[in-house]
Image (cartoon, rainbow, N blue to C red):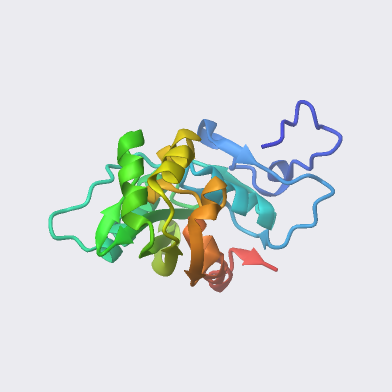
Length: 233
């Protein structure tokens, strides 16, 4: 995130002119630099209900003006709940938690899980758990599911879409997996790896959306925003 105290001459504080409510509630505000040609432009206020730096980076790369309000919800699988239902429920709960205090804004929330034989592999609690997850995935296929929820309470809009990608890992050794764990990267990642970072070396093949594996399926997100008139390209 740029700092306008140091980049006043380079930054176009778009929210002051077009989105006067974006700076409310002490949320984190993101803007685009004045010399940036946005890929898409939002005509409505957008809140990203996620603290994920990867999702935030995608929003910035697209040129969107938005603010971040992280949703504080319990992320726990219910007894008998399948992975697809779980990820869709969490995305919707995150969006609704933020929408309750921002009823006129467009809220985007997402949740991503890694599944191996329908076993949900979330963020590891420690290094040993991360290593165990990686060795379970080594030499096998697994699924990455991301659900995206778009809500605007004032317009009675609540839409959820889920995307699944299949990822194949090669049969790497436990020593190599442990070296990766020691890098620290797996400890805040579902399934204990980040495809957009050092963890890319684990992947032999992807079938489906790459951005979905990162944590935000861009095609489906843009399709939703465009359909509701939130963005123009």
